[in-house]
Length: 153
Image 1 (cartoon, rainbow, N blue to C red):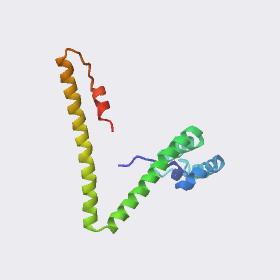
Image 2 (cartoon, rainbow, N blue to C red; image 1 turned 135 degrees about the vertical axis):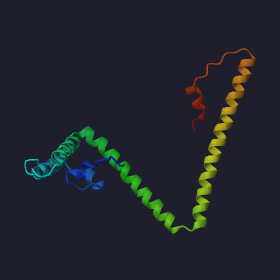
Image 3 (cartoon, rainbow, N blue to C red; image 1 turned 180 degrees about the vertical axis):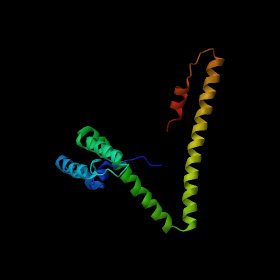
C-alpha cells in the first residue's frame, strides 16, 4: 500500500513539476477555498469530514513552511522521476522482442554475477590476510563493519 500523500493534490493544486512554481499566496488561497468546502460543520453527514479536514490542515502546514515544503518537493520530484523511468521501461519492454528482453535480463544477471564474484574474491583475500597475520603472531581486530568496507563497490 502506498502511503504517500501529495499535499498539492489535497489542496486542489496541480501536482506535477509545475507545483514547484506555486507561490505561498496561491497555496493560502487554495487552502482557504478548500477549507470552506471541507469543514466538518459544512458536512455534518460525512463521517470522514474531520479526517479530511485534518489532512487538509496538515498539508497546508507542510506547504506553507519553506523547509518542510523543500523536503516534500524533493520527495515528490523523486517519485515523478521514478514514475517516468518506470513508464519508459514499460514502453521499451513492450516494443522489444522476446529475444531482446532475454538478452537484457542475461546482461543484468551477468553483471550481478560479476559483482558477487568480486565480493567473494575480496572476502577470500581478507580471509587469507587474516590467517597470515595470525600465523605471524599479529593480532587482527576485525569487526563486521571493517569487513563490510571491503565489500563496498
